Amino acid sequence: MNYVNDYEKNGKIRKYKKYILMSKSPRRRDLLSFLKPEIASIRIDERAIEEKYMEKYKDCDFIERAGKTCAEIAKAKSDVDLVKDCLYISSDTMVILDDKIYGKPRNMAEARDMFMSYFGKSHFVITGVCLRSKNYLDVFYSIAEVRFTDYYKEMDEIIDGYLIEENVMDKAGAYGIQDLDPRLISYINGDINTIIGLPVSEVSRRILGE
Image (cartoon, rainbow, N blue to C red; front, side, top):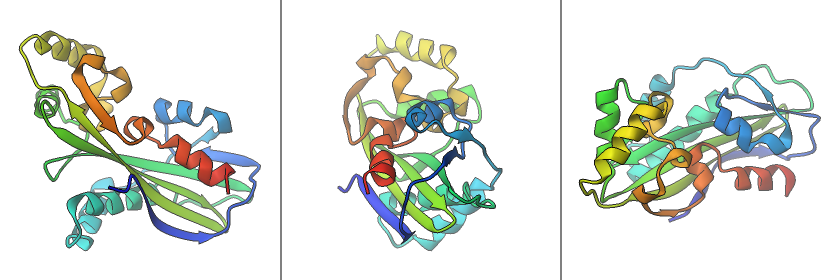
């Protein structure tokens, strides 16, 4: 599996006076702290974009299909009036299990159902990223594989505590990897920051390493 996949690229990157993170997520802001970005965001219809591109890429393998769709959602989040000498950074994260996209849970019952479905299985987390300026566009998506441990009854206390104490309702797939008790995770393949919400090493390489 390719953990980093290019989707669309035009123009040549250069040095910028300002970086703008198109997200209010404190997790993404912390990951990009080395750029000292300004914070902004716009409203988009994520569900409509998801439906459009999941249909467009229906002949692709499901992970590739979801990855390209995630890249399009990330791209839409930076579709704004671009200011000169600014680089806009936007992203979107999806959780995939058994060829199904897990979004943010609608209620606590759904959050628990999502969470319980991970035990003893691998699932995938995809983060699409868009780097955009007036003369540059780079869109890609990153994949990570997560395997939860097999379930055993003593896990109930850990699960209940996590769902009650953490704000899982604003997280795709009803969890944040950085908040989990380490006893829940068997292994991770790929960049853990893809799961948190931004593959920051790849973003840094593309911005500062080219």
